[in-house]
Length: 174
Ligand code: S3P
Image 1 (spheres, helix red, strand yellow):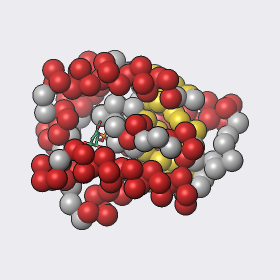
Image 2 (tube, rainbow, N blue to C red):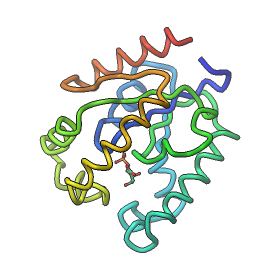
Image 3 (tube, rainbow, N blue to C red):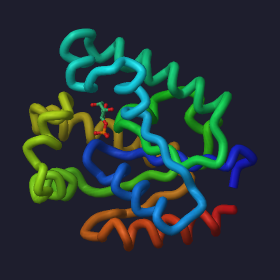
Image 4 (cartoon, protein in one colour):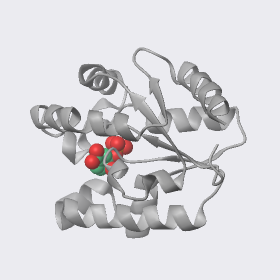
């Protein structure tokens, strides 16, 4: 494990970063924070609203501020991130990078099968057009893989199974 002892979860929208973090929390010493939640509380408004009123560039600047704070001030924490947070230049300085990986179609299926599917789709501006979202996925996936210290294939696995695999792999990574 890095000296900072943070673990940072990256991966495409809807892959289950938040669910995994909450599951890990039940069975380990970690505390968790989520970069989107931090941004929403900093701004006192929803991500969707920030995108609509201020644009994506503004949102990415907020992510950059969060990344700087994480690097300087946060330790021993499991950090889940928005799907585009991996672009932050200091990502690897924040902690061990764990990628939750799954094919695009499986991610969309996972979202659509969720009891709150409509809400899950609506809150993510970059999922509004599935063709564009697939292009974004194809562009990002190799970049995610390049940054990852650990990869967890979450396809057709429960949050519990993923959490077990996560804890085993992070322990092994040291
Ligand atoms: C984004 C992913 C979202 C959120 C924002 C932008 C992205 O988070 O940060 O809508 O660029 O992939 P989730 O990955 O939690 O959906």
